[in-house]
Image (cartoon, rainbow, N blue to C red; front, top):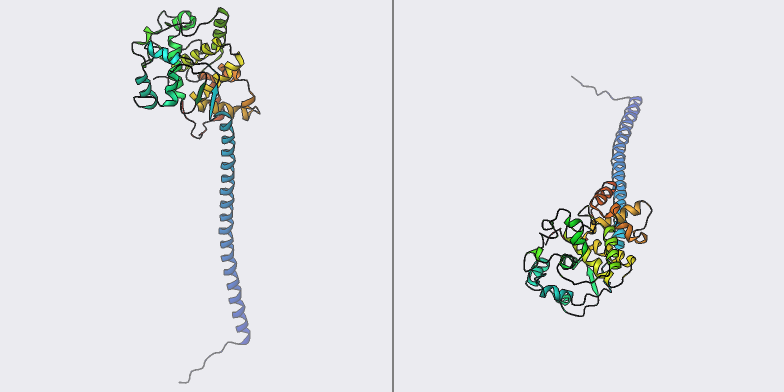
Length: 313
């Protein structure tokens, strides 16, 4: 039987071509829309990442700016140390071998620290590296130097000062700590100078405790007392003493003072232009004040800022 092929008419051919063209265009539109969506999402992600990175960089710049204002490379103070270190060693208040182990983990101190146990030291340098050394040495001075704050002040409110961290925790001497307590005339003060010491000590707080230096129940408080007594005896002005005390506290409690500086900046205040006396006050530098500020600004991860150690040897 003969077969016949049915050929599409010209009209049908045009219809088929038109249909295929529309289908192809529709597919292209769908594919284009999908690719555009993917591209748009990618652009949004990249923009978001760029914005986040920019915000992080800006935040890091701000933190670095704050840190540069607070944590200095070092301070050199014209405070006559003289032979105090040497005398404390001779009296057994400080055992140099014990001190060396506590500070550097060795039997001997490095030369830059050992020099403070020689006579004729007319300057004191403090920095991040020797902050713990000065906590311990000034602690010994504050503990051993005879002063009314130790004998009739808050330390003796219960009639026994032996159980505080600043007394019972002193393990860097030759004998038991209370044998040194307010027992040596390392620093001589007039009645007027004693009043100045008491006034300044009452205004300087530390973030590890809720007490002022007038109640030196921990090592940092006792160390600060020794520093205040030394500076007052040499005729330093209260402003100079507060400025110096803040420098030492900054090395001993770096994160606290970075937080304070950041808090001040958020309130349009400049840390460097704020009175050291105000910064050292109960509002900012006490344990309660520092905690209140931390709650307001949140936890900030500061760059490596060092530490002055804990409330013990």
